[in-house]
Amino acid sequence: MALAFLIATVLVAVLIIREMRAVRATPAPPLVSPARTAAPPGISDQALKVASLLLPDGSEIRQGDALEQVASRLGSSCPSAADVVEEGPLGSRITRACEHEGTKFVLVLEPYERNGPPRVTAIYLR
Image (cartoon, rainbow, N blue to C red; front, side, top):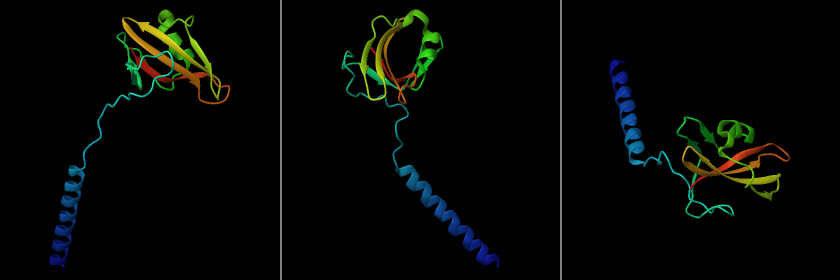
């Protein structure tokens, strides 16, 4: 009985080591990979698209944030006077240029559902 237990333990150890080698051989995906995709009209091709933006004052903007949340965090840093508005399948798509404490960026906002509130769908660093 002791010999059977010892053999089973060795087999389990061999299987674990084999799995660890297979996992180690697989390359890990990069931790941060900002996408460079075709920018919407009015945004330079050199702009860098990011999923979230941490500003110098500690506030953060993320994809999915509602327009009201972003406007309350940024105040007058993102004036709506120069918005570029396009009609999309779910409602208006707004492209808004912002500058907050020296950081220049562009927000693309559109609803996630028909006639829903505008939300951040893209953030571009200039």
